[in-house]
Amino acid sequence: MSYNIADLFEHTVDVVPDRTAVVDGTVRLTYQELDERANRIGHFLQAKGVGKDDHVGIYAENSHEWMEVMLGCLKIRAVPININYRYVEDELSYLLGNAEVVACFYDRKYASRLAAVASASPRLTTFVHIEDGSDEAEAAEGLATLGSIAYDDAVTSGSPTRDFEERSPDDLYVIYTGGTTGMPKGVMWRSEDIYFALGQGIDALSGEKVATEYTKAEQAAASENPLIFCVVPPLMHGAAQIATVSQWFIGSTLVVVRKFDAAEVWDLFEREGVNSVIITGDAMASPMMKALEDNPGRWDLSALISLSSSAALFSQSLKDKFLELFPNLIITDSIGSTEGGFNGITMASKGEKANAGGPTVKAGQDVVILDDDLNPIPEGDDRVGMLARGGNIPLGYFNDPVKTAATFITAADGNRYVVAGDAARWAGPGQMTMLGRGSVSINSGGEKIFPEEVEQALKAHPAVADCTVVGARDERWGQRVAAIVEFHPGSSAELGELADHCRTHIAGYKVPKQLLVVEHVVRSPSGKPDYRWAKELVDAEG
Image 1 (cartoon, rainbow, N blue to C red):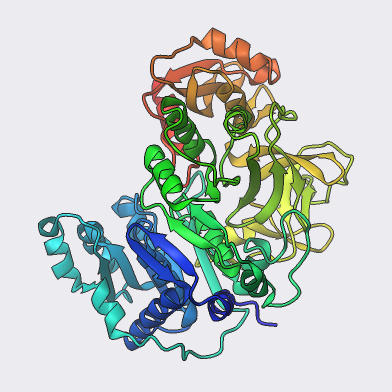
Image 2: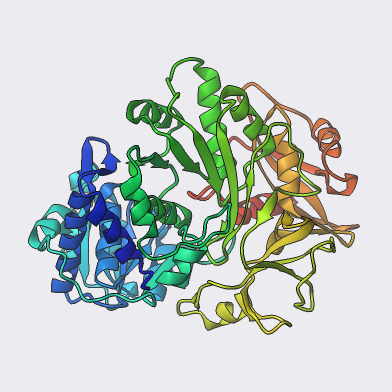
């Protein structure tokens, strides 16, 4: 069996060619049309000398073009490289050089920024711009400097024929992740490994593995009413990419959100009859809920049956609000990372309380918790340890042997694991409680405090719209808990009130001792907390 991402997509095309694969504004593409456009991109890249294992950057907001380039690369065994469109020149330059990008597809509005740093990758010689409605004059100089080709011209120049060489389960799939700190890192997955770790090759709820590479396509062919699925997060985020291809494997129709706006998202759901959606935690759930509360009865959302969150904290208080408005909505909270794959899942129930930390989830296959000596902690032992995953895991980080050695380890049991930095403890048979990223934990008087559990407690307060928690310098305790809080419009609360509220959810030593109020809490486009920004803000306060 060859579990290759491009092959798996093509298996679906072959059984449901006339089904709608993508809805992007006024553009609607069937599986056959999407396949042919991706073939054209593949042939265009081959004509430019791009081949197996070459890295092709995608520097753009969500669009059908983004999806076509991703597939076109995989079809010719090249590697699509996701580029965060919010990067400033230093970060962009680092990524282009570290990834050794040879070609780049980008939204026209980024032409000038790209032109300023393109030399960071000496092999980068092919540039293709996607029309995005931005001002042509502003981009003109950058386009000229790059010698850029219009996307439509690139598409029409390539053949729609699917006549590529045989692919392999060893073909690379690389996802660049910034995490919560540090420069971006390129996580190198084998195609087969990412399929089984993240791409639904193993059912998240049952743990059952697909029988063959055709299993999902057979399910697609058998389905008379395919899901209308919406991926709200940006495709430059790994979770959004994998959610997209996973839905294609089962023949779903993907609805594109170009740029996040809560009211516009609900407009889109009503117009397209969206059944299922993936978001990134509170960063998206909070404004989406506020739009519903501000506009009661505005949208017909009767088609919506499931909502899933991944890659960021989804607080219980928001889950409760969704279940109040949608009593029959299935809400799942998936825990994982770009490096670690799928670690666990929980089904939301109204009024559920966190178990001494973050969410308690059903542990995924091959997940263990390691102690400080790298021994697996047995179930029933409630010591805090490092979350680790074996089985189908990445090869390492591209061009970064030092970080690879630190993250991909051989434990005391002789097995190779990925340890992405998350802390956890066993909470019962097959159940574990997530405690947050250990690298940003707060040490106050020798007690370890994980920001996510404090953030979850704070977000249960009705005045709090969003927050980030970090450690501030403290002469007595070494560090104290500092909360950076964004309040709902017209709402506020003093530190004492917030601390008293938190004490009903977490131990006293974990409650915030310092409060900074901001107009807007800064997060990454994927919804992850920007702990660097928060730490700099707290340090500046003294």
